Image (cartoon, rainbow over all chains, first blue to last red; front, top):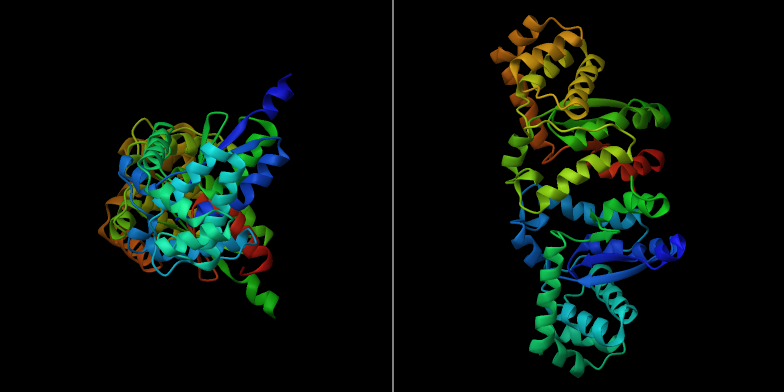
Length: 207
Length: 207
């Protein structure tokens, strides 16, 4: 009974398509969850909105910390055995990719949205593709088996713009102020580097 | 030859007596270094000074992030199996404890300074002692086997004030913008949570 209840529980994973640490975490979170009988619910958000709510800025907007962060992004990817690239211009606008994410989540389910999340994060951080640009995002959609005209209609649709806005508000209400951000059994974990703590939590419960 | 050269190399570990993550890292860095034939050179610094250079602020000075950080400080200590407490007022002024640190480092060596670092960090984060206060710091010194009058003369001495100032400047020049901060073979690592990356670096070299 307890076991069954636990298997049913999910991991909430908040990310931004322009977040390097979200790219890294997105690659391990599925397997980690599966090892512990959990499922993952991804939430595409706009970091700029959560930064504003918490009066924060991107780590690359600070002197000194910027150089370290750029180095650490790549090193943290290599630490997980992942390829890494950065778009020439960074951060990139991600609202359109996020609106397509929520359209997929709401109309085709979490798995379809997860596949899009992975495709988008890999496009940005393994090939350096600026998916904030219209043509680049249309090409990504087409390569992913979506109709690029339909994808573009979605990201221009006030209903899906509103859906993303709600997702951002829900994230802020959940205490999210950065990405990746995880909520497991009500416990918040911020950062790709909280993987060991999340793993212990999943394996043996609260500590 | 290569092995001998490597055994001679050190890990630079920058910390502030008021940094919870420095307290946690200080507890594991010695054993980790020893496992890989390294020695640790600790550097007491003032985070406020490095924050200013990088235009940063303490994580507890931001709304939303503050609550998470306070929770994560304690959880990160428990993750390492360590006791944890926080002083009623936080952060605390640490320049006097840091001046005593440099006096010990320069007159008695790294090991004496390391013992003082550990005593001070444990006082703050296992007993919540406000070691920024004169009487509390005198008592810490006395309990540590130092003459409290001599310790107080040290922290009021312009020469040791200048020594700490130089340490802060050297840290900023080394790229330090937070604590704990490690430099291993020229590679910078920021944060208690970079332990797994440091461990891999020490075990198998650059990645």
